Image (cartoon, rainbow, N blue to C red; front, side):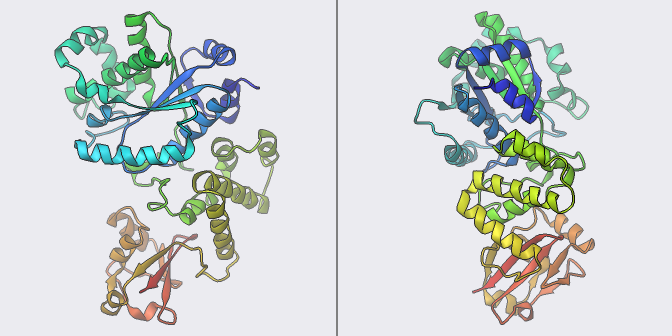
Length: 409
């Protein structure tokens, strides 16, 4: 079996690594327990999390043991990394509800019953006694070094609270605690987590004299290089109730030509030899590569049946056929609402085609919203019963390739 470090390198996952040669040798020599933490900032995982799930699968297939750490404790603080303002503080009930959703989703991708993976919770942070903790562990953190870290440096001008500064110490303690409990020696995270990971490595070295390792993955970006995710309002969710399998498929089918090969490496398990053949593809072949990408990723997240249904519906639309395809995402709205008339923005909210009303106004102003192929002229437009074909349904189009059926009931 190939060394998993080489697999991750070849497929383009790795952004940074603390001791590359040492870690590669360790991964090739013995089974390594590794962990990744997830703060419950929403009630669903996103495609950003999907990349980490792919890495975990490669690691587990190579015989290494995963710890998925739920952030009951750190979720109460909120990571200041890569933010311009303080993260909204969540209450215990919201944290618990989001973690329950995360647990259910993770269990679809990882078998926690066969010994190859553990699901843990950093609720131990809630039981710490602050004075004792800071006396025993806080003394190992140099504030000047902490402020120089990227995760804090960006916030200094806007104001960084002591509450947020404690996040790095908490995450560092998690690594130490997992080393003590499970012999965990490797922490994975997004590249923005580099400073927090280093802090955990240093704390464990000072307290236990142990050598730990850190490895970060690249961050997912849009074709223009901009950030993707919850904080910028363009997240693609793994929960079918938040992003339907069809919309999920369409997201990947609409991948920019320049990103198709990269995403095939990151988000599918297709052999590298097969992906390499697609590098030189042009024109119609690129569309075939996009179809392959969309089908494979949708199959991983939603299963083969949903992937086939989404593919069939998408092909019908791309061919200019019947746009009321059976498997198209559908929202039911009462006939009475349409008889009275419904504002287009409210309609877009009901169909979950927009993240915000400002997005709706922008799309309409740019001519990006149509109802039954008719462009909506203004955000004040009212959609009435006359749009329903045969009194049964009508179609909303967002942009060039996103379609949604509204069924009257």
